[in-house]
Image (cartoon, rainbow over all chains, first blue to last red; front, side):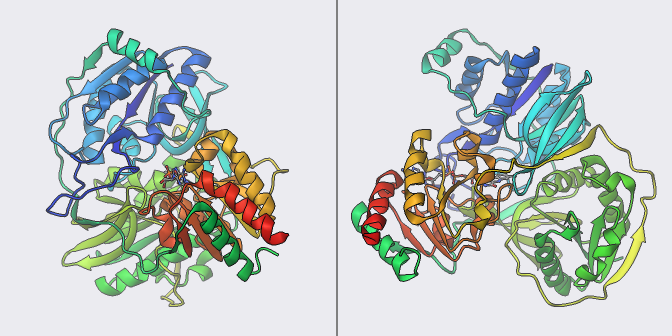
Length: 257
Length: 324
Ligand SMILES: Cc1cc2nc3c(=O)[nH]c(=O)nc-3n(C[C@H](O)[C@H](O)[C@H](O)COP(=O)(O)OP(=O)(O)OC[C@H]3O[C@@H](n4cnc5c(N)ncnc54)[C@H](O)[C@@H]3O)c2cc1C
């Protein structure tokens, strides 16, 4: 099966997030970027499908943030081709605009299955994956945890998550786009030496697709950290002191007898 | 039908409406009061009309019946909803951020070339547009966004609005899709339920929840010891389950379990909206996190900025000492 995986860079939430002086965007100059978690799962799922049934995995990304490292890591994990799309400017494009350029880059690849993370935490205008499916005029289902080859050729089965650890098993006729939430296995670890090896041997393919800004349907006027009405009463001291205080609170509430 | 109406997608699970539907209806009522329009509730699938009494907050309840809507699959659902939206031309379409919502809302927006906003917590009228306040970056930021065009497709975060007692006209209209619904290339096959036998975390009074801060599989044992000292069970956020360190039946949140224990001890959990959805209702929440800005502290009653790996053994000991 020929699989394309789209991977995105997102700000690392472990680092403090800064806002630009105009107050309407994140200050990405101060952010550090990581691979979007559900895209990492999408890549893992693609590699598992390839290992089980053959085919190829092509990873496509906008040239943004720390993307080179992400793409080399993908090769070290087992991806066959890495494709970069030029992305000028210092902010990532809206999901719809990205979908249009990814679609342009993906169309010539004769793809059977496109896997994209179902969500990126810096998106405000919705899922890239369904927009990409619409742009490619392919069927779409998202919130998928686990994909297997189907019983009939040209099909796969995908498990869609519902509340309460319940899944709906869906049969999917290919070609299709899936929004991945989790792979059948956690994303694999790859040693730094293998990534270094990939840096020496792997070649980027530059896509001819060009990013164009579409109509602005959603505009951010203000960004701010939430100021909730209530906030936890913070306990301070050493671990032992905090543990003692928690035990005391639990005893007061009758939760430890 | 009016360009000032607010349309709400009412989701059902089995025979009952999803709780979030009532929150969306309350949001719809509030917005419709500002626009001067009506609230329309759309329920898809055979038997949808039976939900009409429960949807009386709406002015009109549009029940679309077709055998292809009996179980969820994206194409028939998105097509049926699109037909209603195109016929009614509402100002806004409110869809919950659920498993189904994450498919149909963007598909609808793409097909109608309509704006889409995700993570919406608040909506209000802003001149001839709408202003939404949306959560992003895992709940660490809020964004005020202006949505200019109609219909605005708004994906609402569960827990953002309180259900209302208000009632609308409650008129039921039963419809069939004008054109037969295409099955699409993606078909529902069967439900897969979690294997019985594991602890039912929804029935526990005390839950020790571990998030990515647990760092390694081996450390789960420290949480197990603490849960044992407290007479409770260990549960987890999604990344811990994704790693295979705990079974899916222990996951709390949007796609996991909704829990309301007497004590929820959240250790190394950031408190993303999808996690909060499952635990906000706990009677007492104590959060431990090394990041003082973690959103979990916004819902916790008590918090401590400390390493969970140090705290867990100290707390197990403190509890044991109290028990004597
Ligand atoms: C459709 C959909 C459904 C989802 N469903 C769910 C769901 O059901 N349940 C769920 O949980 N998530 C769900 N998610 C994922 C959710 O968005 C978050 O990614 C997830 O909740 C984050 O888990 P976390 O808090 O453990 O990890 P992180 O967000 O990475 O947070 C880890 C936290 O640990 C803290 N930390 C690190 N080390 C330590 C230490 N030594 N001591 C103390 N603190 C430490 C960090 O400061 C950080 O705050 C869903 C997402 C989507 C898109």
